[in-house]
Amino acid sequence: GQQVMQIPQYQHVQEGEDFTTYCNSSTTLSNIQWYKQRPGGHPVFLIQLVKSGEVKKQKRLTFQFGEAKKNSSLHITATQTTDVGTYFCAVMNSGYSTLTFGKGTMLLVSP
Amino acid sequence: SAVISQKPSRDICQRGTSLTIQCQVDSQVTMMFWYRQQPGQSLTLIATANQGSEATYESGFVIDKFPISRPNLTFSTLTVSNMSPEDSSIYLCSVEGELRETQYFGPGTRLLVL
Image (tube, rainbow over all chains, first blue to last red):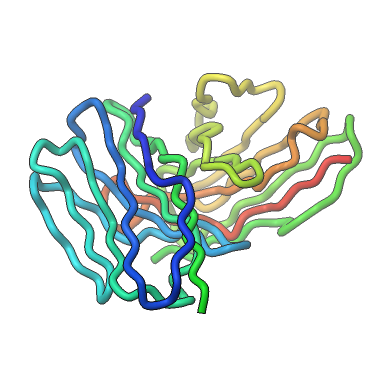
């Protein structure tokens, strides 16, 4: 299946600071998806990026897909304690309907 | 979006026993998936549950250890057989989302094997 590297593994910020997590692939992706998992919860779909260079926003969250469709980022502006959780990127496995998830970035926000 | 329920939500089991986890969806779906998430780790796909045929297992997972049933388009079960402490994980079912190639996840089953 596909391989995707996600960094950082963990980040601890003060409330109000910004946060960014990155996903990188060695191969061109058809699309990339982002999920959020709250502590004790299950992954929840956030967004799907399909087009080269695509940028999508959801309130304080900004998602980008690289021009070469090999990398993506999720940026949170002015973090809040409600942003706490693990953010996963996920990519489709070529020829299948299955997903491969990155290792995730755990975000901790201190008030 | 689909509403997914899983039973049990959590369980503590003795090694050597088996546990069957149920996944119920409120609408008919073609694709259902089973994942394992070990403590502090990412999600690993166990298998795709196909209605009317055998499940498709990922590398490292076998039917004897993780038998799966998919009797209809709204229901699936995953059995964790002959459990060992290494099987302690969260087991999640998911279904295809409204957007093609995305997925909705159930609440998960938290399993501890002693």
